[in-house]
Length: 554
Ligand code: GLN
Image 1 (cartoon, rainbow, N blue to C red):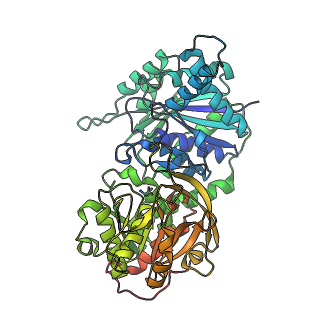
Image 2: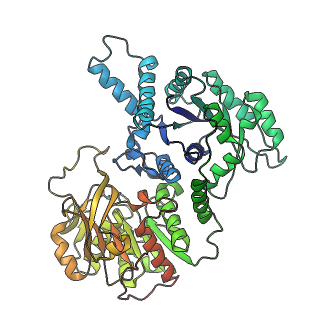
Image 3: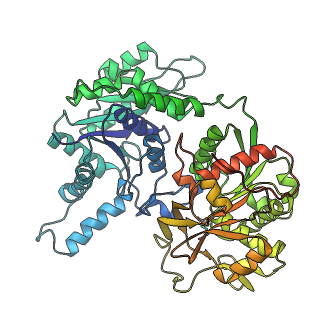
């Protein structure tokens, strides 16, 4: 028997947490010894998320194979502790590009090319290709957007066809809706859910499960009413109430019997939960639950960046800090500081923090504030972790403030910098459009034996993901080393600088790669863990510059 499919659709409004429901269902199947994976369908017309503004759409998540994806892919990776290839994020543009390319290549033998069947066939063949190619028991597919959107229609039609073709025992639809509570009467309202199911049925899809978002657990009488109007069995109307952490959602769904019900539907009765898997998962969930860290010492971290106005724009960095805090026994407290407001007043703004973290970023706006923050960390000894842009601007700050190179800069902001310490390397083409032209995806990195970085990672070779264009200019490496900044991680046969550190400081580290994409609950990325330990040890006050090495991680 072939793969089974769980299709997760959304109703009522966006932002209800379809991604968390999809990840949770997949996690439950994984804990039942099923080989699972997830796909996110994004019905927008961008080819991928790479060109989208993180403040409007949330972070761009980068996969091992260099896909610039929707941030839900990051949720899947964190829930399942499993890498997702870029093919698991399907957009309208990708589907249409393939169809148009096939048409131009004469692939349709003179047929009139249409949404049904050609576009829907392409969608189905991508999903079947993933499930078959990866030998999955079940593929969970989340369809972005809300039922009724024009853009999602071809996708929902393809999913409808798949149920007809694969048979009802191979496909389950989970529809995510909302039951708002009116404050005055305190009653859970079912009408939005009823309308949303009607809309779904209008396009030929009868949901098998309803995951109903609500603040307090769904009352029995609300479940009954929804069941009656939506033709979904009462036990399959699932309360998806607010949880202290998203990682508790699998348990909430499990307690309502979704696993038994799904496996019975799929004819997989007799499958047992993996007790060892649940033990490990529960331990991780417990360590990340709010309150778990209440008695831990604080690590107060200032996150300095340009995209601080939307919580989702650095979502993987936030998660990575949480994973690190749980492992380091610290309560991580993050304040986001807008880099634009920091220029010239970094010392004042950063006082009281145990650590400064600069995540990735692009462009001129706010760069000056980041350089001030890095310079302040160098001067005061406050632990610093710079990621990508934070690595590059740490090098600029070091050149200007420690090496006396007043004209040092990155050519991204200053094309005519007297000392271009960060620039495009020879052979790197300028221009060529913005989509998919960055250095993307994972590569192997060699760490210098005996360096702080090698101690942090407990290894001299790691593999990490990238998303950037500019590089440290190697011709300055010697001057930097003489001044006390060492480049202790390299890739590309030694050509590309990946890690910088200043051994005379308590913790000053920059990484050109993005460590946040490699951090998973229970398996923190080691640079984050070392940084959080250093920040917790530094406490709130700015410590004096000392000659302490980067702390060792066991
Ligand atoms: N803007 C820098 C570059 O393109 C850094 C990118 C990033 O931080 N992701 O190289």
